[in-house]
Image: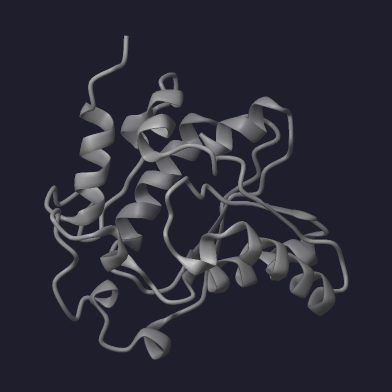
Length: 194
């Protein structure tokens, strides 16, 4: 939905994926490439993949395959990866500075409970990045007013079957048992309001 918003506005988009060595990345990249291929328009630039391994930062963390992933019954707080948005945005900002791109857009949704997903965090980080990189960097979160259910309903004309959200995929398929699979299932199968 984030991608569609900018493409429909005619804004050139450089999709960026930051590989950190997390257990779901191979599947996520597979589905991202399929989605981008289905949405091909002239102002959609080729996917850029950046390697930024997080193993030395996260140690023996579940996201790296060292423990079971948070289950479908776990609280959303169980999926927290310390400073992940900080790492992802920092990598994106460096790419943007090199390409003379001034805006970074993230699909942060309403209800994200983590400190690195707040408006204050994005505003402060934007200022820090401008100082560090010597050019304007704005961080946009245009989906912030939507929850997962709202975002799925708003994406009704998008190829939602080409999107992916799972913490422990089986090949390129979702496990159906993790926190993210449960969240997606609730949003996809929620009754529609009349």
